[in-house]
Length: 103
Image 1 (cartoon, helix red, strand yellow):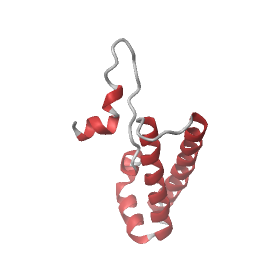
Image 2 (spheres, helix red, strand yellow; image 1 turned 30 degrees about the vertical axis):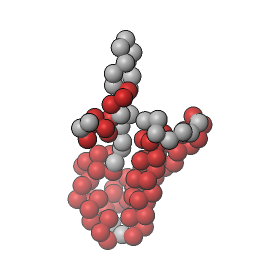
Image 3 (cartoon, rainbow, N blue to C red; image 1 turned 180 degrees about the horizontal axis):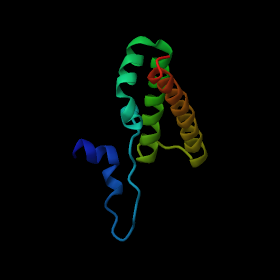
Image 4 (tube, helix red, strand yellow; image 1 turned 60 degrees about the horizontal axis):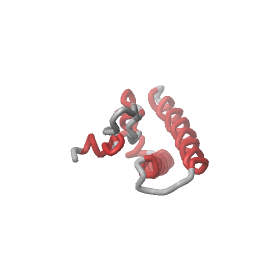
């Protein structure tokens, strides 16, 4: 299986007669393609940002594992994880905006 197919959850792509949204990871470099420079700089220099990024990546991997069927979790708990990811995304986005403004 190719890395791209694995990332999309290829088992969900082939279901005759059914349109299925493939599962995809949301790594920070894809969530914030316009902030690559700030991402690298903050990861190298800001320990709090590094902790946010680590928590985000771990949460994103867990959500993907649940959605891909590799880890069992009920829908309510999965939604809680997704809400936590949104909160982390907002915190990371704000810090990236500050860095882009020179702060």
